[in-house]
Amino acid sequence: MQTRSLQTLTRISRIGSFAKVAEEMNTTLSTVSMQMKGLEDLLGVVLFDRTFRPPKLTPLGRLVAQRAESVVSAETELLNICNTDDGLAGTYRIGFIATASVRLLPGFLSRAASLAPEAEFEIETALSEVLEARVLSGQLDAAVVTASDRLQKGLRYDVLREEKLVYAIPSALAAVPVSKLAENLPFLQFNPNSGIGKLIESHMRDLAGHNQGETIILDSVEAIMECANVGLGFTLLSEPDIQRYAKDNVKIVMPDDSELNRKLVLASTQ
Image 1 (spheres, one colour):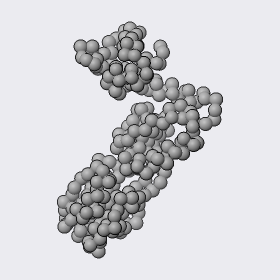
Image 2 (image 1 turned 90 degrees about the vertical axis):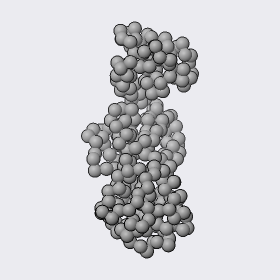
Image 3 (image 1 turned 60 degrees about the vertical axis):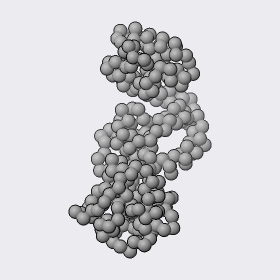
Image 4 (image 1 turned 180 degrees about the vertical axis):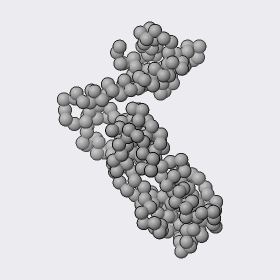
């Protein structure tokens, strides 16, 4: 069995369109269709329901596509191992959490272009738990995520950096204790389903107890800081993010807990 047809199948599974896959692979629609028909004949099964336009994967087709991902990934790793050059070569799929990508990704790509010119990197962003699952399943080679107290079995975690969590508070209210501030000013909470969001939510819950006031949940660091900059609330985020977006009318306040930080780690298979 040639892996090229499996590569095409995995692309169709991800993209959902024969035509778009053909365009991405710089080939024709008929070539893609013939590859899939040949694969079905070889396996002796029906992978696509062709009563739909475009054709949809059957339940068995989806299962075969999932298994094919590991075959394609294994082939890529084998080619990388057999490369005659000691440097990195081939394609690597790397995930980044959104709150780290804006700061870490440019430097990563710049250094990669200099140190590994023969390598190509496919980048995607998502929540920590999603990225960890994709590393475990072989869909990603590694991912930069926020460390949590629930380590995934089968993953290795290497600490890249630690970042302090600090408050951004309107300057006029900077002297008010945070536990009291939360009773009168909305707290701008970053997505509590994210790795850093869970750390922040847990800390604020312990700090405010039953007196926690209004909470506004947003999934954009920039949006949170713009709200804080105009006095619509206060927030707790990593210090580099607050330093990046804070304006003069916002005061940066350190928490009483000097150990309050988040660790950015590289998750990879062991």
